[in-house]
Length: 442
Image (cartoon, rainbow, N blue to C red; front, top):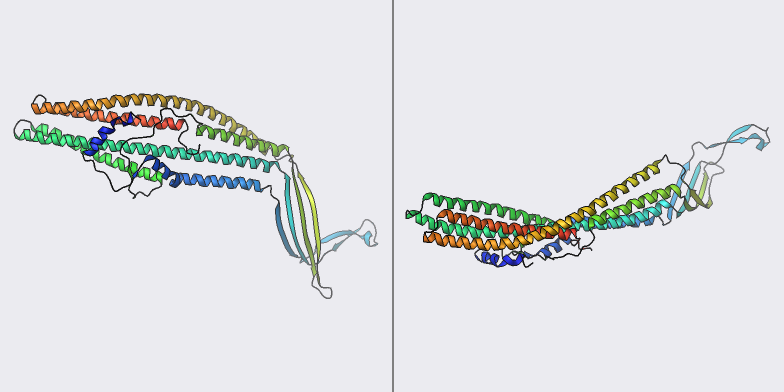
């Protein structure tokens, strides 16, 4: 933190030189941008909806244990009554002979209430456990989305600050170049400087103005991207803090990686699905059921027209055991075994990758930290050289080429300093993400 703030004094001096600022716009800190995004970012809103959907799916799986009650009713009018074959011996006829006969009446009405209670069903039990694991997986996916959003917002915020400081340096260089142009133009009028000297400075000023215009465009594009991730309309004014003052921690606490946690959660989910398939293949299911209702029979011909109802009720058990389903379950189990194998390979790869990225981020941060110290002193040195060269030019001991060279060296040192800060902030963000310190739901 001390290293990043080492150049704040120079930045304040440049700001005092007249860089335009939008005093009327609200200044947003990085934490305020993050807090706004947590509430309004559309990706996070979708993630929260997915969490709610997952919870409803878990409740849906549990609902399969609740008894199911249905009301059934039907009416049938027989244009042709059904036939039955009756032995003639039942009516005093000879043995071994049969006679067709119609039974029943044209009007048939049925109504009943039927209840089914699952006593044991391995598929339902497995789906409940799978739904719980899927809910955990959805929570981790939300944390992953949140981590990505916060990382992107922090990256955009720091990039905007860097571009802002680049514009400050360009404005400072333009002031120096315009001052030098006035002096050289005066010398040219007095025949003490050549016209090509004036043209060189004019070219330099034109190049600086082009860089400034490109920087302003890039700065606005970054602010628009920041508004998008924050869920703000593009026409809303947004001003960020000018000084680079991130909350940098030297040593982050190593927490579980969300990527690794996601793979492990996926592994549990696949194993649960495999276990459910095994149970449905090996274990029976048992349901209790019952029905109570009435049956009505009607006849509309004279003189025996009637419509009578008779109660009917029963209870029972239903036992089901899979014997053979065409090897479908076996193929599904084989597929799950392969998915588990792939999942384990992915887990091993992520653990190795995370270890590599952690070491690289630590090294990159240390290198960038040293670069900030070096480039900060180089900026001060280049500035002193430029000021001394200007003084020597006034005294006639240095020519214009020396001034332009010193100016280029100053600009190069300024760019190197900003590049070192960019690398340091990038390494810090990477380290924060790798160690699992980005998500707000830890």
